Length: 152
Image 1 (cartoon, rainbow, N blue to C red):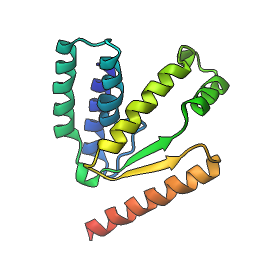
Image 2: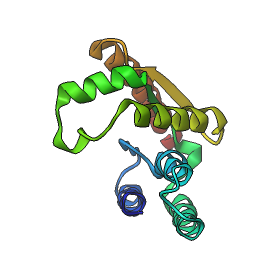
Image 3: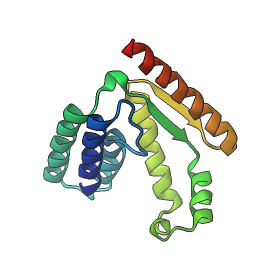
């Protein structure tokens, strides 16, 4: 719940101060991936889920203009993701195991496949950092150009 409310607050601040918004995670993935995962794992009961659903709907209505939204989906196999987690050696990530990554990948893929309210750009992040950067940079430049054209 805290993650969702934090993202709603971040989104609200951004829409009042900037034309282009870039988030590491949005309220969309927070709800459709992590909250869905928690519900399937029985970490949330029905009442908690309904409360989160109401917060999500409020946040979506108040903070997101899906007509000008693009989702970047950084696609990576759970095994490769775990290798990178181990390499980073962050204390906060030590409890993440392959099974959890596989389940989250399933929820992300399901979300991406079924979400059609805005464009989704799938970026293969198993490639080199330079290639990943080039793909992201290309999409961002396209977005900036469209944003500038809409102002004219």
